[in-house]
Length: 114
Ligand SMILES: [Zn+2]
Ligand SMILES: [Zn+2]
Image 1: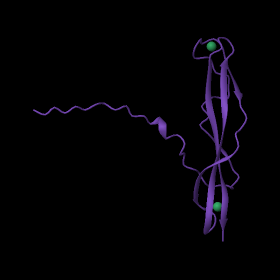
Image 2: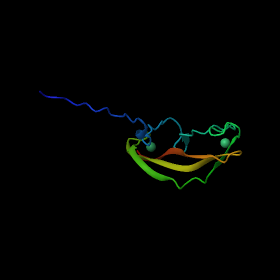
Image 3: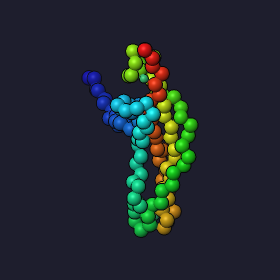
Image 4: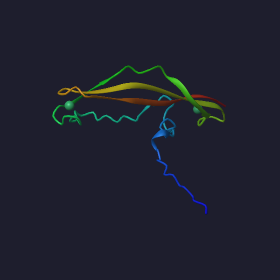
């Protein structure tokens, strides 16, 4: 008799991250900050529940090209999708627990023409 074994798969929806659909609809220099998971306000520390998280922002990286799409402005040419990142660090001022996340910005750079 055949026995079918179905192993449960853990669905990880997390991995999709980088291909955030780019919202065109502004000027080509408009940048949009994505994935900022740290609240601007001082949040209480998850570890000790006493201290407050102090957030510091690293330097932005250089813009790098992460994609190329048909130009949305002109009949010919392309728009380059540029992205840059920076490190966001939060450290508890009481127990010193820290967490880091990545802040991201994207913009499109128009290389289209008539
Ligand atoms: Zn703490
Ligand atoms: Zn364009």
